[in-house]
Amino acid sequence: MVWLEYLLPLIFLFPMAAMAAIVLALRSLYDARVNSPFDAHPLRTPGQALRNRLDQAFSSLFLNGTLGPLISLAPLVYGMGRMLFVDRQDWVEWALYGLLSTVLVLVFSLLLVRDYQRIRRLKLGLACELAVGQELERLIRPDAHPYYIFHDVPTDSFTIDHVVVTPHGVFVVETRARSKALGSNGKELTQVFVEHERLRFPHWQERRPLYKTRQAAHWIAEWLEKNCGISVPVRGVLVLPGWEIDTSEAADDILVVSGDGLAQKLSELLLGELDDALHDKIIYLLLERARLMEGKPLRQPSV
Image (tube, rainbow, N blue to C red):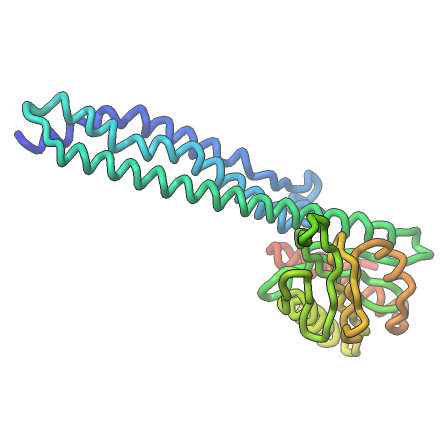
């Protein structure tokens, strides 16, 4: 029967299919998310959203790097199996197998390049997130110095990198990682000029970082006013780690800094005065927000 000539060669693909199944089973090893042993809630650290995306990127690199060779060789292995069950070789058919393998090799090569570039960007972003988070941790003091820091605060449609609650206002901190530009002399160009609506880097300009910072600050201000019943002083902060910031033409609603001495700058900024009741309510609302977005409401304290 002619159809057996096409069915029987599939036997040679079974070992490759078994290896692919093992690869898919090992993919879960790249999930580094852990839950608290006390309440089973996901543990969050500075840059947790980027950590999750980095895990996904490494998982994609692992799959493309291991499944790619298996899938690319599958047409050739199938064709070699066909040789055992046919009396006459069809070179056109062999050419099609070779062409298909070549196309698959090119596709997986492009996917690996994409994963490599994505991982580089995410690692740079995570490094900046961790540096800013470490700087913000210096705000933490005993009860006499009531600062509270939240990382990866979820909104309705995006995530805010950091929210800092101080006795004098609330700061929404966004971090953006950008690689340094090189000048004609080979030296790094590290100065960025801040305007009202855009950032002017040495060889390019961007509007989105300022827009996203304003969006995050606006969302927090509206959300706190809705839940607290009064207006809460909120200011957006955009951090560009490693850059020299020129704010001579910047707007007053957003603070753009390099990150050096960030904790001291935030502690010295006086947006307004938060009484103890409002200060504690803001902290509770942000804690509740994080728990609700995880599907686990925060219990109202008994006292």
